[in-house]
Length: 375
Image (tube, rainbow, N blue to C red; front, side):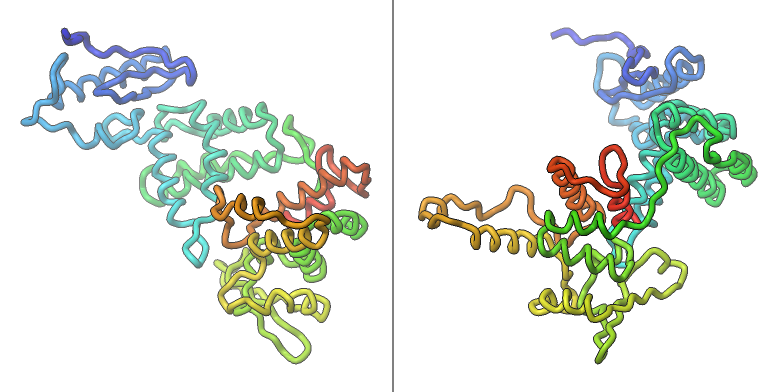
């Protein structure tokens, strides 16, 4: 079969509206399509590829290995120029190792950063990081507003971008004054921009909690009541372990292994009164010092016990043999803020379908109950 001796040529990638060139079976995106910079970068990459010993219609020359930079750097980087794409990759690598809990588990901060960097990449892929100024950051903010993101979330995501450039200045990837220029962009003020405003997060109403409790399994009922009586954050509730609870004669004290302000050197102590102690004691019976108190496995066990109690017919041998021993999706070691909130959300939706009215609610879920798990 004859070989194709044509040189690779830049072409238009319609999905991202960028110029792309394929070299050695790999796509290199060179920036916005139709710009001279994108075409120039594509030609530079083609020259590097040919100089690396990959002539047209033949295999690589083993005596002339390919430059390492061409193989590992993002396609928008040419030479020593730091592009927005390269900066985002560098910062995400740093964030994956920095934003971790004391037990070594990664936090969800990098996931939120990726959402913030998405419009940045859409608008300024291939742009030099030094050329990204306050007006460019304002354009990214306008794109977020067009995507119907709330004002508070827009300010939060813009803060992520500013934090990335601050880190770049600390690492001497950019001049020190660059961050101060981006910091000059003020946060959006309430009702003074086109950004969507959200309802304020208020404390959960006791009447709304009473309506939702009968729709929850026993373990989640206990979690809601403990959070209701102690006022602790959701992240502190889901990581409760017996080893972190000091049991006195009358009062108990709970010291979370990690909490929101631990990195500032603050200590967090949550008093546990008699009512909370009564709810916790059944779950502490068969729980080791380092075991999590509230687990999805225990919730499944309680649900199955309730089903057996209300069963009216005998269990047939064929049903036992059909029981699934291995779950397709294994249960997690403990609840987290997301799964805890999702369980409450499903209960709220069932209550709304049954005609239950809540004191304060948003178009989809009761706002007063949503604040219980977002506090």
